[in-house]
Image (tube, rainbow, N blue to C red):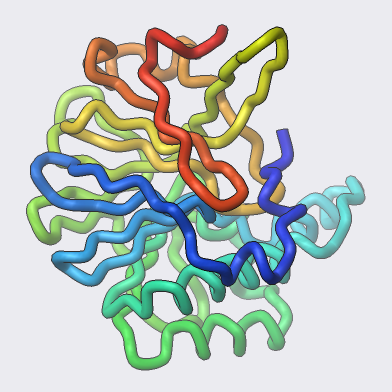
Length: 242
């Protein structure tokens, strides 16, 4: 499923949002409808699975996708950085869709990232799509970051999940009302750990009830914070469809 934020207008992206106030392992956090997590006590903004240059990666393999994904994703990232003006940005892996993406990215997009990173620390977590880090971009590439009582990594761990903020699985959830069903990307958390929604506009979603999610959460406490156009909709796991 294509990330539906691709259809957001500039006004919707820059208007005040109704973020969900939560806590992960005791750390205060805001789930923003644009798909970013903000940690106000540490002035950290977290995004996951940008999958920049996905269209270009597919084109190199002879499969054509609309070539606008990088610009669209960076525009949304610009909006959420403008909203919070964070001291630190953490990008949780699969920052690029393949190993060659950051090296081959057009200069205009490189300059956009340079502008967004100016005056802040930028941490690129390495993902399974881009395990070698970035090329000629600001910030530093690491496999894992421990900061502010949390652990930031790309793939969720089955053995060390407390305080974890991870990506990789692109969680989504389906809700129904009066015979109508809506599926949206979501933040998934049971208060102990979180799996982030994919930020990239061409990223698909994996249902929160999929077997790949088994064992990650205490389902009795699990809440899906679904991305809406201008607010977050928080739904308990046992109220989801699927």
